[in-house]
Image (cartoon, rainbow, N blue to C red; front, side, top):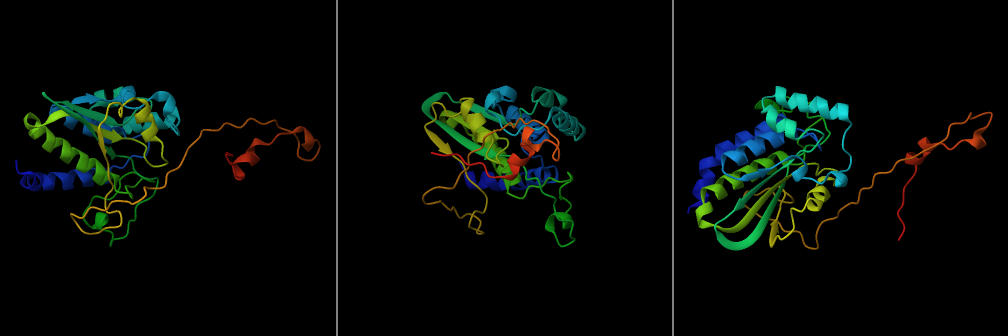
Length: 264
């Protein structure tokens, strides 16, 4: 086993995959193309692959786009070259993928998580921008991999390929969790509620270049990271004429302009 050499052998593939994901970014719950590519490769390498409602619990998903928006991005993913059969399984915003290796030798259950969604940002078109210079800038208006998840997805696939190569020498069970909708803190809960951390003995995740710009350096946070809580809220109002009978109205439009606080 020579992991360092194995990594060097797939280095160019990792770069090309990362740049491909960067060129076709997809934000939360519309990562159809990204998820389909991941699912196809995991299948090729012999993983037991889970997609659709097996990946995320429906009732725990938050901030899912409208059906019209989802259909648009489903069709776009197919037009951009992924197999329609994968996209059809993910209809309705059930993106993400999980690959499982159940090994012959007894051992611990290990989960590794990689987020895959992009940010809702427009990438620079400046000729000085490296992605422009080398031809892999975002092709999707208003979407950009500005937080490194294109690299996370590529790293996850690299890990998957190497683990599959050495599966006869490994033990226990390995779960590779390719998580949708990380931005906005939405996708993790839906995966947890779907049961993917049940029985897990060791859990690993990470982030590219957090407080470090040295290749090969690992930075560990002391005291953990900040997190957020998300809730879905619906407001119901009653219309009334602002000049004639304002006291009879309940203007729900004003509520989002204020601050919602949750007491203890």
